[in-house]
Length: 248
Image (cartoon, rainbow, N blue to C red; front, top):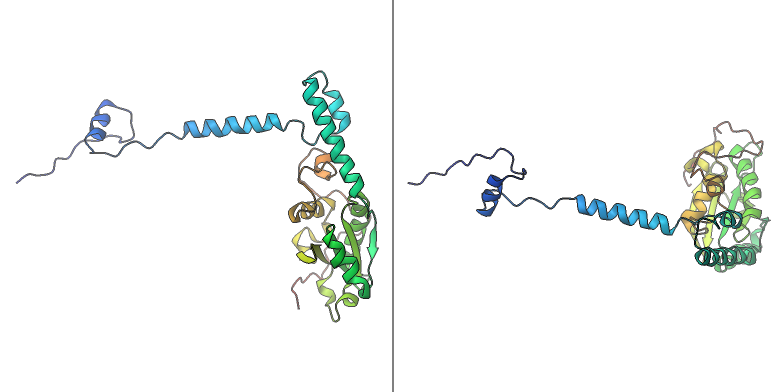
């Protein structure tokens, strides 16, 4: 009776002549392909993309400073592209302020308006002691002229929706194409009473109201990436005790 032979194997993954013989006879499996070529290909593609996008987020003044370093024809093409982008933003910036809402006009001023542009509604608190609501009102006033192609509106929560609980304010409703695309109940999702402009800009990018490479975004203006909120507008930043964000 034949007995199985125990073939000595030190390291089945080692590149040795003995292991090659064992693999040839099916004693040990073939070595898996090395991930190195895939990694090198990914790094090469990343470097290529970084080079191709090296002028992304550059302002016109910054492009002028690169005249000695870049191909003149390519730079001029990119400059024209940036001018066209800025012109498009300027033409679509028709709102530029916070719009107070009345319930009878809500359908026209919000739902119908959202078929042409993004509309963000702040359902405010009826209480002057709601710090988050006061903060969002101030942030709304900063965002509206900065992003004039987005319509920013405000209405008291209980005047918009009968019986709407004040503890759910501030509430942000994001409208587009006649529907609510996103709702944020209180600022707990962000940084509470420490919420800043950058937090809301991230929301605008997430819902598609702004492109991630929009040069108006605060993190692109400062070249620091998404970071700590940078504005408080003299509104107290202590945590509000009334921050329960459950719908009722």
